[in-house]
Image (cartoon, rainbow, N blue to C red; front, side, top):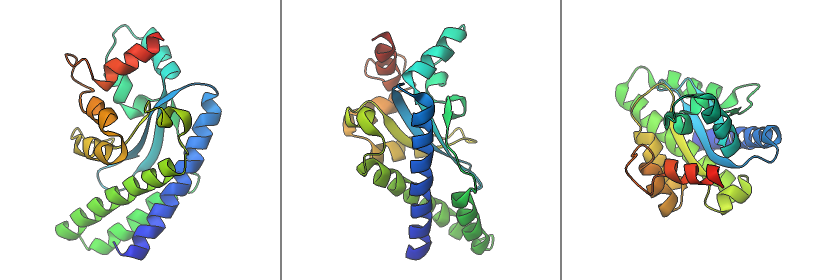
Length: 193
């Protein structure tokens, strides 16, 4: 990805993230967000924004028989989705994908560049104050996630780049039911407040 291509995708992503989160915030009214994620698809054909609040999570948990921690982190189950009328980020990255000419090394590099570009876009939005009070208080995690893959490497590496160290460490423990400092347990505690 050239610097010009990177900047174009970054700017498109910042615009979409901003539009999407403002839309989510309006839908959620006074609910408290605990997570915002950029969802990707492994073959670079997907890009979407997802967010969840403590209140929407509580509604799901109240309706479910089990208290599965998956409800906390499976972004396809989250209550709030972004808006993307023209899917500009998707079109920009798929146009670049056609330039790789089925070269596996070029494709792998494009994927890494794309991930770093989206992380930078989230950082820009965060630095601009988009995510508000929850983020300022350290109560909202940001990350990237491949919706069609069970490998959570990008979840963890993006969290390391996007979140304060304590929040990132809690995020890393999110699936560990024996860890007292897992983000899942911290969110459960906040549900009880």
